[in-house]
Amino acid sequence: MKIGIFGGSFNPPHNAHKKIALELIKKHYVDKVIFVPTGSKYEYKNNLLSNEIRLTMLELMCKNDKLLDVSDYELKEKVIYTYETLDYFKAKYKSAEIYFICGTDNLSYIDKWKKGKYILSSNKLLVIKRDKDNIDYLLEKYKDYKDNIIVTNINADKLSSTYIRNEINKGNILKIKKYLDKNVYKYIKENDLYKDISTSV
Image 1 (cartoon, rainbow, N blue to C red):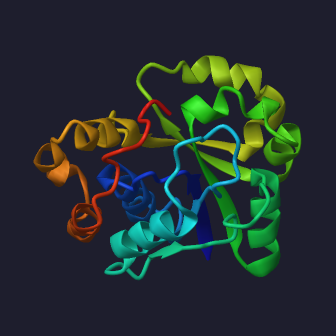
Image 2 (image 1 turned 60 degrees about the vertical axis):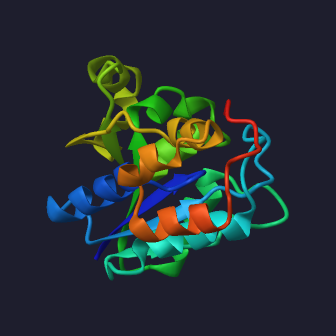
């Protein structure tokens, strides 16, 4: 079995996240995708909703698809780094192939992450292209790890969680309904989420 690990803040999770996961499965890059939300202790994200809320939204988004799963592994009282997460899943699913799902935006500076070169040398990366990013430059930059970098034929949508938060903050929640799973939209609306927080990150 091939399992894709999809990390992110998912603040909130939206249809583009789900679309990427399902396309990776449909095109046989992986057989299953596990969403792994970043813990609230991560210092570069200062406006995250609680671990519990973001986990609940992901579970709502994935609950009707048996090939999508959610893990709370990074939702701890300390920062869990990506290399630790990947090691955890490789140990948990010893008979599976583990792939790290990574956008070209993250790939561009992954060597600066905690043990970034270890991630590149010890893991398979499934790269999702963004229009503005030069994939040829990145492949040259990481040529020493080229056997571990798989550039998919999937392009990332321009939809972002930041845009969704901004629109909700401005009172335009109906405008973003089409970008969210119906259960996630209902949960956000019923709990008045994202109305009184900073939306810049």
